[in-house]
Length: 151
Image 1 (tube, rainbow, N blue to C red):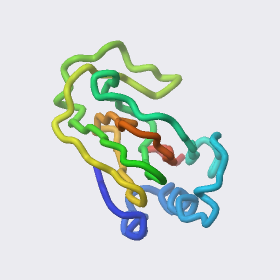
Image 2: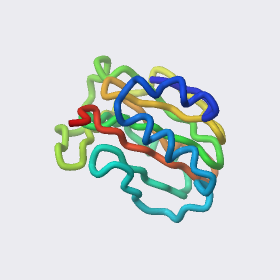
Image 3: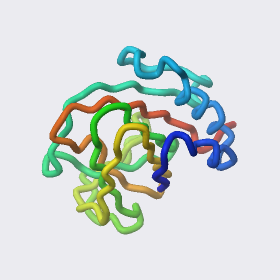
Image 4: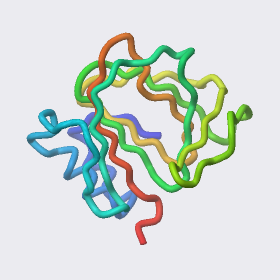
């Protein structure tokens, strides 16, 4: 898991072949004005989801993990109190891994809470269980999904 300011995103370009295109999208000057929808960046290898939603309470959320995609979650407005726990430490799955939606949920409590404010992003790798969208207010976010395997 990585937490950093968007201005430092260039430091992580070499972590995955899809990261340069993901960061290029996140640096778009019109990012704040994009409508809520899915944006294909590089076919199924890199795509973005723009969201404007009310936050959830911690007790109404579950940890989630992904196997095929890395999440780059950028907060555009509000503060997202994201929970985190190593996937290897999760012991309470609520179901099996869903290959189609690339998600598995866990009822475990996070080990850490990250107050992610406007202009900051978090990168969650497959080994990172995470609980996003925790806020008492409204959140505006972009989540870029980067395929682990770029082939």
